Amino acid sequence: MWEASREVEFSDAQRRILLAAERLFAERGVSHVSMREISAAAGQRNNSAVQYHFKDKRALLWALYDMRMVPLNTRRNAVLDNCAAHTVRTSVDAFIRPLGEAVVEAGGRTAYARFLNRHLTEMRRLVEEFGDDHVSGAVRVYRLLDDLLADMPDAERMERFHQMNRTVTSVLADLEERLELGETDSPGARRAVETLISGAAAAVACSS
Image (spheres, one colour):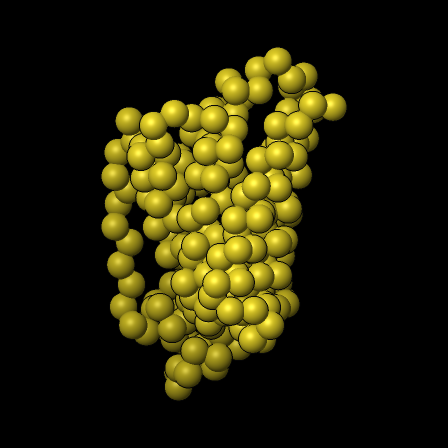
């Protein structure tokens, strides 16, 4: 049984900085955004505000992961804990729904899915550094799918997991932008999340 993740709290100023960094990182990538630009985008008069609150860009990046991934991990584990029977469909649902619902609830006002989609390749190098607070739910999903798809060759199963992960972030990044631009509304976004879950579960489970 999963144990509750730690609570992550930020001051109003820290949250403004993190939201500004998230959007700039989503638009241009982490390496192309300066601390000074983040301070300005967050409405901080002091150009050293980011350094004051987060010391350096790496610490800021990890604070952003804490702000987003810890609550999502809590929701993912809750979905898994409330599932009566684990199937491919319910496992994929638990993987996708927390981020999908967060995108819908934000209504395009945040840019986490777009940041995640852009940063996923670079993030691959950080996977081993994430703790249980960040990824225990995702690890549970992959272990469940490993058991449920045990008859599938390992290489094929891992490739399907990789493609599911990349498809999910790409589709939800696009959905987040469509919400921001007014190209879809909350009911339409919820339908898109359900379609993504159905399609991803079918793709993971289908016979080759």
